Picture (cartoon, rainbow, N blue to C red):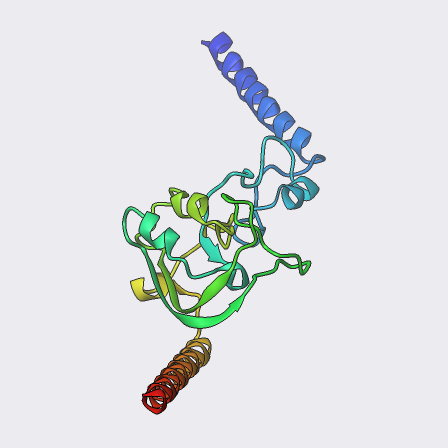
Length: 214
């Protein structure tokens, strides 16, 4: 009985010592636990500065929340047609013919034809319903200018589903695009009418000349 009693005391000291040795060993190294969401875990650099072990940020090919670079978008609607669950909604209007440029001011190439991208339509609506998105990456792969792509962002906590619809065209931008489209349409109609009038005058002149000859 006495032997078992002292053995239990010994085991108690031994287990406490083993536990405390692990505690003391980790007191002087960088922490493994990340204080999320205060710490940005999307960046490997941020994690490497403060934490140790196998912790890593989001991989380079991580498909997070989608984002649109409006300046690169030609409103071609290819991504909308490619999406298998119709979570992208696009509306457009006529615009002045332009060539999109990147941040360095260089013309954007069509990834499939390797020719300069040309913009003839302006966005009046570009919505992505992240609540429906399955992050397949098909829209990103299909975009000829790389305007739409996945980010490393994954936090999308919202109070209602409506807030999960990302809108990339503001009401002001839509109003400007629609107004310009109406002006372009009016200019085209005016040119068409002027051309018809000119053709009419030429025809009348030709008929008059024929009548004079007779």
